Length: 358
Image (cartoon, rainbow, N blue to C red; front, side, top):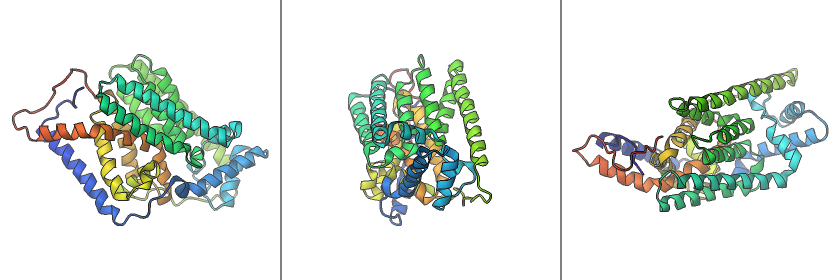
């Protein structure tokens, strides 16, 4: 498979400098980082809230009245409307039950795992890299079977995003579009994925891009109706939130990835090294490079400035996908080191003609 086009000395050195800078930043903040948080610890209050909301709906209340009442009862804000989750997961939990929902989530994760294995087999990555990526994805999917993870909207959205990427093909893109729409219906934080796919399809596959833009518009309608329903259910004295603009920086990004993966069992400094390497590795993953790097990159940039310390479970949205990039990091490092020391060529475009950023 090819390396990113134009990987000359200057670009290779810049990539290595950014990589080392992120690792150094993470190691520096690891000394002051708190103890590793598990998904259960980070989101126990939220899980209890979701369960109580579902219980109120099961007892006969409509979803929005139930959600607002539960949030008021436990000191949660009720405004702005984004503090109330979309009703998708509550409806699913009530339809199939908590145990069946967990099984369904794990099966969804496994479907994404096998779909990604199938797609990696067709992107030209080496057998060893493909096997390593599948193992890493499997470790990420394993967390979906842990405790109350099936109550986290981010886990469902992340699993659907993974499956959408795995089944995607330029010739058969509509299943990916539908899965992407399902992802945002579980958690609106998956919206960057839809935007990335629409933008990437625009230059050469205009019809596909229109489809992505169409589901973005459809979700806009869904979310507007959600906002109206939340507003209509507000008490006479709504409880506001302190907001999510916290400027948590790289430390918060690493905390999110740890909480959303098995890295929570390892020291913070380990995540400080592995997370930048994983994002770096995806640059060398062939056709998957652009959608994965763009999606994860947008989410990482947002988390640098948005998110409270108790929101680290947001990492469930993308940690599994991100960490699989470690499979491609060794070759990426070798290529960058080689290119950085080459003073004769302005770029390195060796290898097959197909671009990994297609």
